[in-house]
Amino acid sequence: MKIVFATNNAHKLDEIRQILGPQFEIVSLKDIGCHVDIPETGDTLEENARQKAQYVFIHYGLDCFADDTGLEVEALGGAPGVHSARYAEGTDHDSRANMAKLLREMEGRENRGARFRTVISLLCHDASNPSQPREYRFEGIVNGRIGTAPQGEGGFGYDPVFIPEDHNESFAQLGEAIKNTISHRARAVRKLAEHLRQGQR
Ligand code: IMP
Image 1 (cartoon, rainbow, N blue to C red):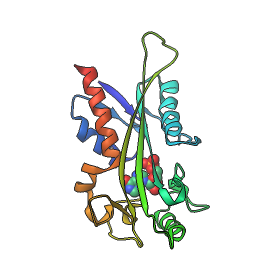
Image 2 (tube, rainbow, N blue to C red):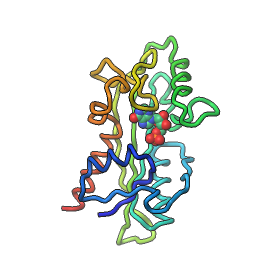
Image 3 (cartoon, helix red, strand yellow):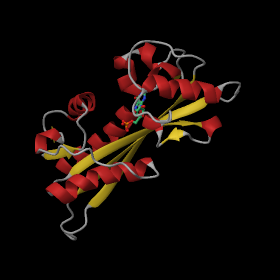
């Protein structure tokens, strides 16, 4: 079964191919000749994930899934959330600047609770309604807290300041092997995998 993952992130592709195994052929945007930076203009993770999958479904006529992730901090009313990649003003995917802003916003706050949330939107052809895809949504959450300073060299994004529950080290310190068993993305991907496997039975 061939299915498009609306990403060009090699790490995410690897992760999902490993979880799904060889019976699914997961192809990237590059693999289908899509070189567009698909806009993510939604107000929620759900909207953004759907928007990316929909672009491929409409322009390429292929079943497709896409993901979007946000760090949701309790004391900040769920921010940075859908704006996680561009939290620090005037930047884009600048992890240092984003973490610096987050730590400034968290100064003096007692409640440091936070979670990473990933949403995956899968759009499939629907035989009973060929013009409209059928959407399936999968969510993965990991609860934790925001540390008082970045710790660890591994990972990416907010990993050095996020300490998952039941651990005393940040995602960046715990390393990829542990992170990949408990992470928001892994949890969402496992739900997607289960859904796809059921369709195969
Ligand atoms: P994306 O939807 O996967 O592109 O994630 C949006 C932003 O959330 C990224 O730019 C990162 O700042 C942050 N992010 C997503 N996943 C992770 C993670 O596993 N660790 C740390 N930060 C993450």
